[in-house]
Image (cartoon, rainbow, N blue to C red; front, side, top):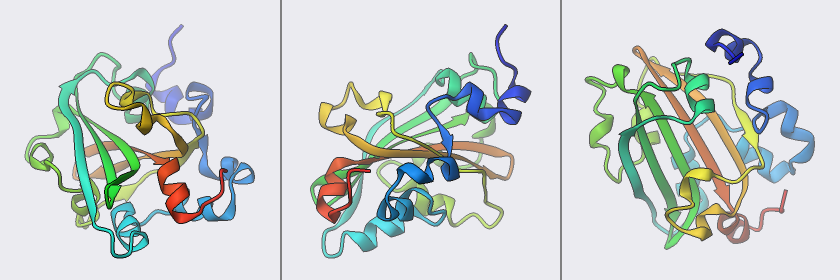
Amino acid sequence: MAPTVRQACLFPHRLFPHWLPVAAARPAMSASWWQWVASTDSLTMRLTVAGGTNAFRVQLLRQTIGLPLRDEALALGIEPRRYAWLREVALCVGDKPWVVARSVAPLSQLQGKGLEGLGERSLGSWLFQQPDLVRGPLYATRHQPRFVAEHSASLLDSVWGRRSVFQHSGLSLLVQEYFLSTMADDLALSSR
């Protein structure tokens, strides 16, 4: 029997075996990675500061309407066969991608939000300007991002991933961010 949306809310660790509540992943994470994975402020701002004189930019990999992955739909509390807005980007510092991200929002909730026109602007720059923004719990993973395989093998090499659902004026938005080994190398972060 397939799990229900209610079960997904009550027992997320059972339905999403690759995603742990960030506090449960803490023992396996170095202090330097904890500062990145567990932060709840704007990742765009953090990357901009960490990059120093290197420019921050967003590289749009794909933006489309499609079906979310099953665990994404459950995290959003929607039926798996419902169409959603899907956006995949690489967050680059200088000429190197440091983070790859995938955002998913129910298509029925998008009207009037303006997300379709983001282009190569940061989603974070839009999100953190919303006065009623509520961020759900953070989850972490050591698994690689599945969505970037078609773009470049170098984007698959992540150290940690995190995700959470943001709520804003009737919109539920799942944001998944994977910190790449290029970022770890450039910032001299540990391998865990």
